[in-house]
Image 1 (tube, each protein chain N blue to C red):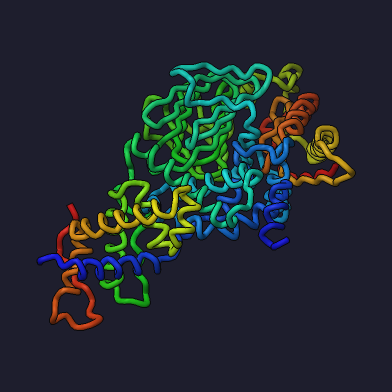
Image 2: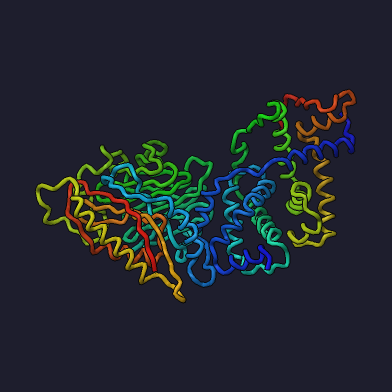
Length: 346
Length: 208
């Protein structure tokens, strides 16, 4: 049909009015707020850490959780949410790392950021090498543990962790992978990851949010999702000073409630002390924080911090981790996991 | 001090609640603008986050020479443009809508589907217009801003804005018939026997 400019203009005008009438897409505002609250590139507001912003979002979260639960180590709920990557000041720019770059987190954790893609933190004592290409970040975890948050994507997988013979593939989630002497632990906070044998990409067992599963070094799910041999389940890098020697022949399945309560009290006290000593304040301004702490009493008697959700300021968190190394609990067959609310005030 | 000044002052002082208020006040408008600037893309949420991170970072440099909303729009436009520039240098993964087309219960399903197709078609046309022209076109035709307001957002003289707007309109009009769903509506308007208000029947062919 012949094109009449006036008609075309009327047609365009009609379509424009239809577009104008469209409402804005509905997004997950809460999730965006949460992401803004933990935005790794968020700068200090006035030379001090961006605690103000974080605190506001933390306070909102504080009302939600009054979580007190006992979970057998390796159990499914209430979830041990991984300690997500924290302050970014020392984050390496992952996009500038050469292929196969090796990272050693000898004395402190190391954070790596791939712009608009992912951010992962190699926990202290860990060692990993990283390869990027084709929009995929591939981390080979040689030792220790890492925590990652990956920006959701339409692709099947954009972030892969290979630990021994186990492959963890994701395309948008938050999770933690820990390589121990005889197995690989995977804890997922958001989304789903696929864990399977390294030599069979695309196959394996999905692990979803709030799940915590263990796999053999070749990527096979362990029965009961706990290490088959607790004696051998010490972390490959034991920086807690816990020793496996002197283990009684008949171990209780789990530490007693009294023992666990004692350790929990020590941890809460430790948190309060660290918050007091490592939180800056001025003119008598009261600073409060609220977080959910997830602890794991290891079969070997060590005490491990699984998560602080939301995370505390890095100096406070480092202080807590330091203090935890001095704590110990009775050895047991399975260990135990505990989740507690921690209210802090300065 | 106006409520807006107070909000800005509190945000500058590091009051997280003030920042949250700003986010809640402008998130819908910014989302709509980003959506109109980049079309249906999966990265909308990331871009929105980026806008507010930049707002937070730069609020101290905001000199209140324009309204806060204008300044935030400026940030959003820049983020969208940066995104588009970066997108040109990487493979585009978005060929399909990120969500199924939803049918508005209040209108006839075929009518609603046709309307959504026309909206998608217009975004495809806008995608073919250069960044500078598309920005002023979107801000004027879809956001309803005046050339004066747009000049503050894009940092160009009003006359330049008007010129870009003129050429953008001409380009969009010239391309309209490239999209079958838009050509159909023009044909319907041109047909003398077409009863007023009759639904547009689209030809059974897809855009190339």
